[in-house]
Image (cartoon, rainbow, N blue to C red; front, top):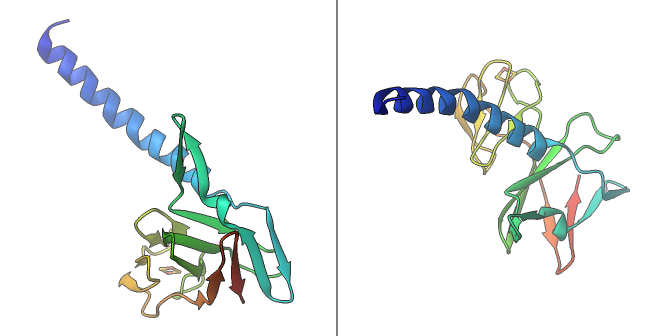
Length: 146
Ligand code: FES
């Protein structure tokens, strides 16, 4: 195999493998966690739900998703930093499809609306920001009031 063939083959492999890798990563990340409590409209979950072991290191997930059976749409909780968490409904404000959360945005699979990590519309056709939920926390837990 000459140099040109090698580079061509490598590029084809990257183009094929990377999207699959990202898709698998996204599916793993967006799988809702089930370890939380829902009592009288208040959700309680452990802060360490954001922790994940990767390559012998402990890192923080950018977000987690929960889906209490008492409500119709999942909630995404973004960890901005140790002192800031934001919680949003994953119901698109355009026509109510379920948004897909990513590290840098939330995207609607139905008509392509996008929302930033503050829940603000950054790309239509949605015109209204996402529903946010009040969130407080202590050293151990996060509390979301619905
Ligand atoms: S329902 Fe989300 S963009 Fe239309």
